[in-house]
Length: 339
Image 1 (cartoon, rainbow, N blue to C red):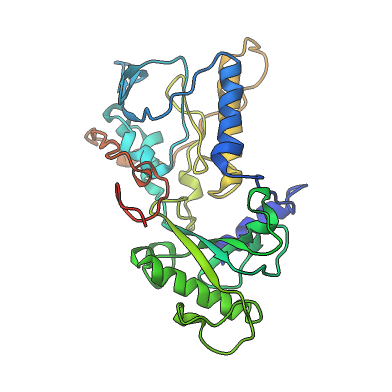
Image 2: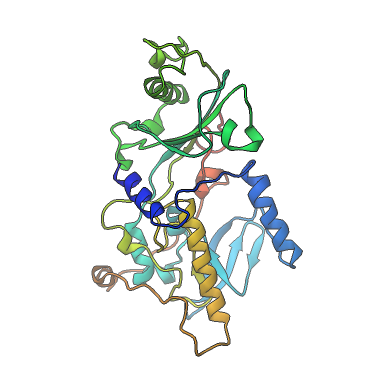
């Protein structure tokens, strides 16, 4: 609840913070594809299915090149927008003893479960994201109302965030290790408790059995697990969030876990990306009289002290090619196992 209240406080202090919006379709088609088209129309190239396996350094600790699955590649500028737990696996030995990068060990992603539920009837809903009163469901939206691609006046499709879903994230049960059926049953039980006049008692989902006059039944579901999602917003973590500007020339950080005013979120990721762009533009500027967009955020003294005499640590790197390996979410767990 503390995280929800903190997020709401940040948003309501923005001029347009009370407004939420959804893409009118799926992200690959409606967000990623137009970005690729924009880049390519201006002479850029987007490499897909070419994950970075390692970062090689010069003697001065600047980046020499990246090793991809299909060979080495060098660029003028490097920006990492990887999730924090994935980036920690990629930090090369030459950076591992630098306080700027050492502080990132204090940040750790928490598990989150996303649930998609299709019903045989239209539920009462609003056109917007809703915070839930449930201890299991943090936010949800009826995509049949909020998103053009799923629009329907006859049947609802809910998307929900099931969190906290493990003791690490502040929950009492390690839900992320449970079966899809148990997760969906718990979700349906919470929806029945919250909306007894909407959700039907259904023997297929024991948690829904009981009083209530609801008639909507579940027809299909999908459970997407993200074992390492946004960083854990526990007290004191903000001081370890690094600036977008780094001590390494031509290497900039982005990602929602880097320093900016929002918590780990889509809004935070967008703002962090804008700040990273400012760092690159500022470094390339010929206007030497203007103040830089931002400097390098100071590192806590105890982190600096811990680096003294520290032996370099080789990067573990990312192993595997499935979504979870790169900090994403997927149905089932591990490569090739999908529900």
